[in-house]
Figure (cartoon, rainbow, N blue to C red):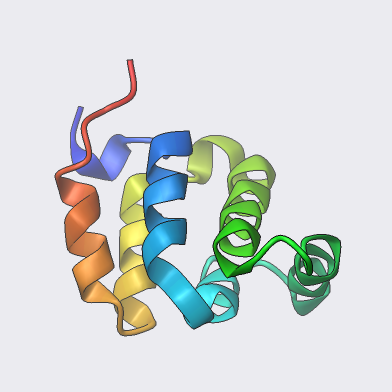
Length: 97
């Protein structure tokens, strides 16, 4: 299976959440989540730290877009928000068994 066809898994979501930092909202917008959805994630996880908030935003995207939540879409969004180094790390992520 090519990188373009791979769906994201929890390992990938965790990896991105470790590296995305303050850009989690920008990434969420690039992934077509609404500001209301991003606000809800921020409110629900306000005491959990930035990393957990980023992870929960990515989970929201994954759940909302289902089989369209592909690795290629995530990588393109990361490049679009000027985080290409994070996108490059995803290419080396082994598929979840």
